[in-house]
Image (tube, rainbow, N blue to C red; front, side, top):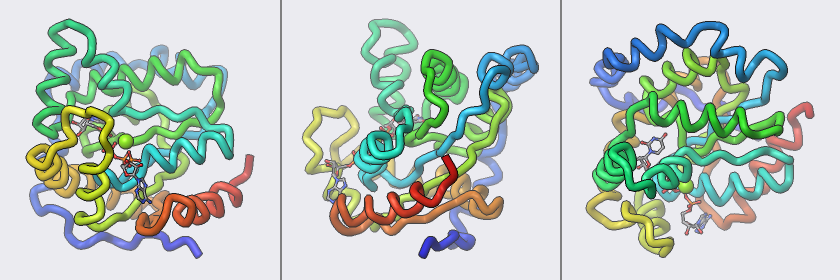
Length: 230
Ligand SMILES: Nc1ncnc2c1ncn2[C@@H]1O[C@H](COP(=O)(O)OP(=O)(O)OP(=O)(O)O)[C@@H](O)[C@H]1O
Ligand SMILES: O=c1ccn([C@@H]2O[C@H](COP(=O)(O)O)[C@@H](O)[C@H]2O)c(=O)[nH]1
Ligand SMILES: [Mg+2]
């Protein structure tokens, strides 16, 4: 029924390089003391699902369905960054430039936004859509927030289909153009597949074939969430 993902084809041989933590992030992690982690975990231990997949694989579409059917709060890392990007600030401009290039925003920025969103919500279960994008993101989340995901979903979709979907999305996103899509696909393979492999090895990954209609895919997702304990 649910195929646990075996090791994916050797993602990228240089993935080890991506584990290097920048000095600025090391400092943030150093100060991620238990007191800070307790912000989130002292009074509750939310159920966290990371939702991964390439650009246009249908993460956002399926998250909206899961959220309404199973009472999850849906936090899209991309949406949080786009909201921050719209601020006329140095940080906003930095995020805009990175998104335009299809690259990954520094972990401390994204983890901070996710942390704020979790803390300001009263939900006890979260879908974190489109994060972590890299091993560095993953390590930063686990260190700063102090929890690991309970479950990781991976929407597996052929590149050709993803490109078709993104180009047809028509939501005015600055990165929905063929040049940026090509870069996002490369970044997905280079940096995101190692994260997927990591959670697969930990037995937390559920791979879903993301071809077919939205309803067909949601049937598979519904089956998984329906089998989880509340
Ligand atoms: N199963 C599907 N079949 C056809 N179109 C789909 C399907 N699922 C989603 N779409 C459409 O494809 C586009 C991309 O979907 P969505 O925004 O959910 O992807 P995403 O994984 O969140 O992408 P991104 O990483 O770029 O945010 C949207 O226009 C959506 O309506
Ligand atoms: O954790 C994240 C999530 C997103 N980004 C940047 O945003 C764009 C768009 O993200 P979507 O999930 O497709 O909405 C992505 O290409 C990255 O540039 C990020 O840096 N970190
Ligand atoms: Mg999305």
